[in-house]
Length: 165
Image 1 (cartoon, rainbow, N blue to C red):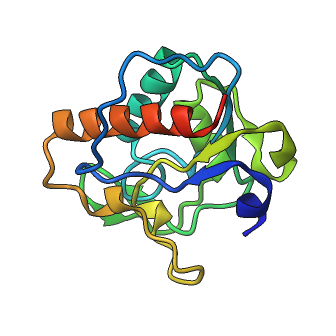
Image 2: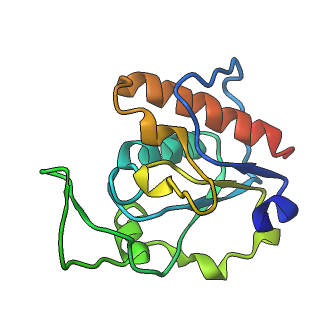
């Protein structure tokens, strides 16, 4: 609700069926906050989706500022085995810095009045039963990567267009 009241556009992830015909537009004045939740499909942000969104935002000319909460992960998953790791703790901000290449800010410092849009890339970490937030990529495991990439491109183009800049 905090974001909804203060941003022109809030987008919580995408699905691979998202379609658009808008192509080739550039939005150099758009400032987009990009909120990560760690690094890894099972216990953080899905890396392929985050990378694809960043590529398309760059192509659209948007300025991107990355954020993540400075909290401990709820759980840690060994992605090679697909199983939880016992007695291990990781910080969401530190793990998100892997995707952000170190250029990331604590989500608590986000000033929404300075941003035109916010994007939350998916991953299982974005299945939040308490707040009833589910992003479709958490359930897209069987979708071919090129279809996801094309859908993300269409989504980003429309986000840039809908920002009104």
